[in-house]
Structure formats: structure tokens, C-alpha cells
Image 1 (tube, rainbow, N blue to C red):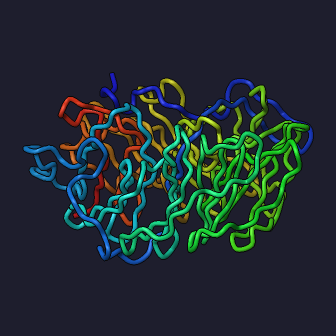
Image 2 (cartoon, helix red, strand yellow):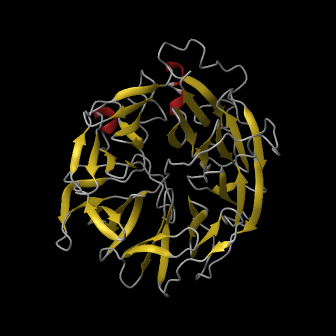
Image 3 (cartoon, rainbow, N blue to C red):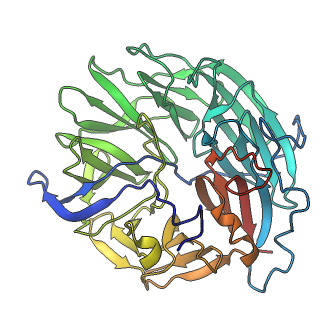
Amino acid sequence: MPPAGGPGKKRTAVIIGAAVAVLLAAGGGVWALAGGGGSDSPKGHHSASPAPKGSTTGSDSGSGGTAGPREGEDDPNDGRRAGEAKVLVNQDGPQVERAGSASPGVWVFGDYVVKTVQEKVIAYSTTDGKEKWTIALPKRVCAAPANVTDDGKVVVAYDSGEKDSCGNYAMLDLKEGKKGWDKPIPKSGGFAESFIGLDMALSGNAVGAAWFGGSGMVRVSDGETIPTPQLESGCSVDGFAGGKAMLRSWQCVSDSTSHIEKLDTSTGKPVWTYEGRKGLMTKKIYSSEPAVVSLLSDDKKSGGVIALKDGKERSVIDLGKEAYAPTCGMSIMGHDLGGCQGVAATDSTLYLPTGGEDSYSTGNEIHAFDLDTGKRKWASKKTKPELMPIRAEGDKVFAYQKPSYDKAGAVVSIGPDGEPKTVLQAPQATMHAENLFFGAKYLYEGDRLVIATTRLSGSSSGGSDGNKLLLVFGKG
């Protein structure tokens, strides 16, 4: 049996590929049955270490409680074995009134890991694990992009005070530890527009967001609106995906077909537009640059994964009858297009994990696909516990190997020989803690593994079970 609360929990995933495959004559390629889900994308741009200027410090790091190791809790670095990583940050979550309260947003910046915690944003030093600065917001952070700018700025959304309305933006300077501009989110004039289901993406100096009934893009530096192409009546934006490029997907009721644009982040004008395949809608965007997109029909009977270049189909990924399972969280209104974990890409290669209901007990593989041809290049050795891609670099993919009942998790690198090689082994003392996240996001940046909660459990027992906030591992 898997550990309670850990990898054995039923996860929300996109299952791509199945025993049934559909070959679409128009354009060719294998298009496979696919299933739903939404999620997070572990990418980020980083630069110099932030300084604690203008910050608000303190031990209270969340509404309804404090974050941090419980009093008397053992130091997981005590008794660390040879070859095991050092625990750089170890934080429990606050007690909250509502179980499952969203906790979006985690960024690695210089020597800090920055995490949203209810109405606060807190920087933890990876040098000593301590809180260095806190930025307080008027209400709870309700949405945040996966990326920050190269100079350490990010825009988050926070509650406006109205029920379920994520109606305000605030720019945060992670280098200085200060809040910059703070404005209501500009409405776009959509029918029955509200900010329910708002999801965000950041690229360059721009943040794009889509919500129920509207969408828009603003500059990170000053919050001013960046005009985006107007859509005809009966058309709406599916969402944005950020990172190295800003992609916007939209569709019209008349044809149920998603169109995808790469937008210039300075002007908002399209750099290129992909007109889409008739009747297929954007399910997820696995990578913005190179552009790799998962498409799905409304009846979920046809779809597939394509690579795009300059608005044209670069290739159709030949998934065959294999089941692939990038991990995706819930996105109620489906606007979080760029949020899947467990998928990685370089300019030439896409990496997908195999998976299914029994992947925890039987293990899985990571498959590498050529983005020019769509064909599979190589497969990793089948590995147990299962692997989840978290970053790709050169001809290698880095993956998080989940903890088992008797061994802590690890980061492994895999190249064309298919053999996983451990590059960072979590200490045995944290094996249980790795399974205490109500929902988790994984980053591997600068030889540091970050595991951060995406939802707070609401635990009020006084213990930390199921209420972990942040774990950071590094070599030391």
C-alpha cells in the first residue's frame, strides 16, 4: 500500500493515449482518446538574490495560524546519511477555516524561495531556512502565475472582498521584498463578467489572465493595460500560457475550434496565429516555446498533442496506444492552460510520463519525442516508484521520483540511454513529510528541489499531518 496522503492518492491527471486511437485524415497523425484535468507549470526566471529592504518581518505567516516547524519537532538534518541532501527549508502550513483553501504561487529567486500563504507572501532563505521578509496584502491571494520577471517582479491576484471574486492585482518586487502598484483588475466588457475562475500567466513584462466572462493583459512594471486582439461576438478566450512566450487560446461557439496566438508582450499584437483543427479545442499548453499543445474534442473522443512553429503544425506527436499522464490540478473554469506538471520540453524534444491507475504499484517510464517528426526517440527504463518530469535541459530530463513506503523521494536525470541516475536524494528523515502535502507543486532549480503546497488542508489538530507548506532540499 502507498503511504497515506502520498503518491497513492487518486490524482487528477490528463490521460493521453488509450487502446482507442483516431486517425484524422486531414493532416494525418495519430490522435488519441484523452481525459480531463487542469494544473501548474514549474518554470521560472531568476536573477540576483533579493534583499530584505522595506519588508515586514514576523513569525505569523498565514491567516488563522502560523507557518513553521512545530515546537519540539526534530531537525530532519540530524542523523543525515552520506549522500543525502540537506533540508534547506522545512515549513508547516497555517491552520485555516476551510479545508482545501487554494495556496497558489511559489517562486525560486536567488537564495530565496517565495511562497504565498493566504493574504501574505513570504520569502524563506535557503541558507538558514528562516523567514526573511513578508509582504502583506489586504485579502487572500487567489491566483498567481508560475513565472517571475528576470528582475524578480511578479503580479498576483487577491480577493476583492466580494464572494468568490478574485478582483484585484498587486505587483510584488521579490528582490526588494516590497509591494508595488495595487489596482482593481480591469474588466474587459464580457457578458455576465466576473472574476470567478481567474487564472494567470506571465511572460516578459506582461501578465495575461482569463476568467469567467473576460480576459486581459497588463504590464508587470506599471499595471497598465496591454491591448489584445478583439474577438467577435460569440467568441471567448480559453486562457493564456506564459514562460518564454505568451500564448493565448480562443474559440467561437459557431465552430467549437480553438485558435492559438503568440502575442507580442509589448504591444499585445499577434506574432503568429494557428487556426486550429475543426472541432478540437485547447485542453492544455504543455510548453509555450517551443509551442506544444494538447487538443481535445468536446465529446472527448478525439484529440492529440501537436507541436507548433510560426503558427503552423510542426509535428503531430505519435502517441500510439500508450497512456500518458502529466499531472494536472483542478481548474474549475478551465482557464489554467499552462498548468500541467509532469511534462517538459526543450527546443527539440518533448518528455511525457506513462501512467495509469496502477502506475504507483507497477512503476512507469518517461518517453522522449522528436518535435520535428513527432516520433518517439527513446524510453527510460521502467522505474518504481513512478517518475514525474520536472525540467529538461540539453539531451536530459530531470524527474522527481516519488517516495515509496520505505524510501524518500529523489531527483533523477535521464538521458538517451534511458537509465535514471540520482542527482539529489531526499533524506530518509523526510520520507513521511513528502507525503503530507494536500496538493503539491515541484520545482528543480539551481540544484534545489522545492515541494510547495497548492492547497492548505485546514488541519486544526495542532499537528502537521496533511498540512505541510514547503520543503526545500539542496546539496550540503
